[in-house]
Image 1 (cartoon, helix red, strand yellow):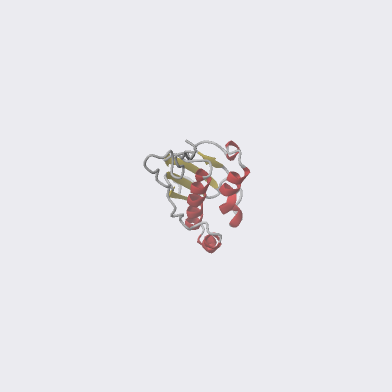
Image 2 (cartoon, one colour; image 1 turned 90 degrees about the vertical axis):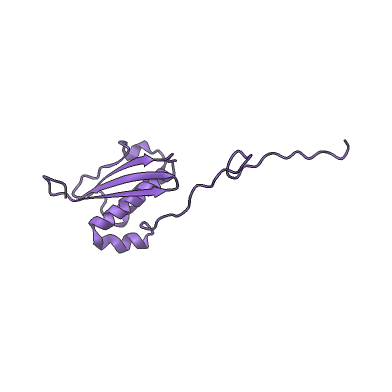
Length: 140
């Protein structure tokens, strides 16, 4: 409960790969959705916007909640930020509205993604990039 108001609030700290985020969901809101102070129009990719909205669409709470996400640590690429905020928002919605827990679970929104970033190998440019081999010709 937020002091001085009739609004409930849930907070979650989640991580995905090397990116950590803190997500706050407030009940009886106006549909505000911000990530690091930017609205959804900041994210140009339609796929990213769909990922952000998935928990709200699954639970039919679109326009009723305020979601505020902050990336606290890590690089946070264009595909990781929406996924980490989506997971945090899903966990908060499940805490605020227990009747929507099964919907979120069946949609796969409450499951943590265990994959991590692949390490860079020695003497290579990246995790998978190999050095260039030159084949010497038999002629000389």
